[in-house]
Structure formats: structure tokens, C-alpha cells
Length: 233
Ligand SMILES: [Zn+2]
Image 1 (tube, protein in one colour):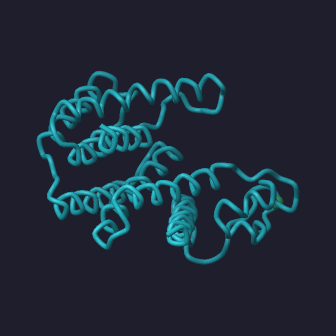
Image 2: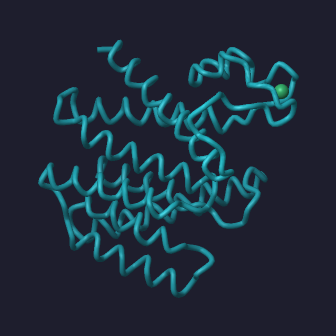
Image 3: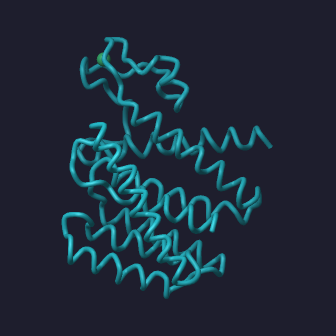
């Protein structure tokens, strides 16, 4: 059991690592298949232990051989991705039927990472992740179009009132997640939990100067709100 969890953790963390690299490179217009990432300071390839998600970072104490710090974003995003998959497997049960929903939520997590890093998500990514998530809901027989429509109107109204606070992508991302939340009042709760946590955590990060930009990326908070309301309440 623990062995399967460990394998799932490292598999998911490796996927996150690959996705981060792929996303960076296509944005810079580079070939995203070949080669390891390079240190931003000395330009050499980053040390090989970094190929091992999370542990490599701890082993090398977060530095390149030239002494330059490597962003903790990488081990953090990998560790959270791995933990998310293990948690979902544990929650849904270790069955074949769990694989598709876990993968669907994991794809939504990758979208949240893309949003938190670039404040901009490719439409194609949103379509692929969203289609996968909707397919998982349909297969599970638990899709709630009314909740999705409700959130679509709610975030849509916010978008028109405060175009700087929420983006167009937020409307789609939130409504897709809401499709998985039964009953309208729970989807309203999802909305509330999301914005309260964004205000608390985003405000805190901004206060401690961890956030350079003023706009808080919303995708991670929508996902957090979905997990809290969809699973615990
Ligand atoms: Zn270096």
C-alpha cells in the first residue's frame, strides 16, 4: 500500500516537473523535448540530482554547483502535486475506477500551476484539461450543469464589474470545476471558500512580499475551494 502511494507520489511529481519545463520552454519558443534545464546564473545544466523530484532539491540544498539558488517553486509544485494524487487515491480508493478522476483533477492542478506562474493559461490547455474533467464527471454520473451555469454567471458578473480581479480564464475554469459540485448552495459555498481563501492567502503573501504582482492568480484557489467543498462538505 505504502509502496503504491510512494510510486504514485513520485510519478505525479515527475509529471509536474516535466510540465513546468515544457511550459517554460514553449513560452520561450524553445525545443521542449531535448535536454535538461539550465541554471539561470551560470548557464550550465543544473546538477543531475534535480532530476529526482523534491528529494533532489533537498539533497542539493536548493543550490546549483555555482552557488546560485534554485527557485523553491519547483520542489513545492512537485511535492503538492504528488501529495494531491496520493490524497485523492486514498480518498477515492485504490481501484481502477479511480484512475480517470484522479488524472482529471491532476490536470486541473497543472492548469492551476500554469496560472500561478504566468497569470495566463493557453486556451488549448484549458480545453484539454476541461474536456478531460467533464468526461470524468460524465463517466462517474455526477455532473451538475446547473452548478456550472450558476458559477459561470457569478464569475462572469464579477469579470464585468472588476475586470482586473478576475480574468476570462477564471470564468471557464471555475464553471468547469463547479460542474462537479452537486446543489447550487454548495456551488455558492465553493465560490465563497475560494474568494475568502484567496483574500487571506493572497493578501498574506502580498503582505510578506512573496507576491510580486498585484493580481492574485485565482486558479489555485478555485481548485482549493473545489477540494474543500467537493470532498469535505
Ligand atoms: Zn549555476
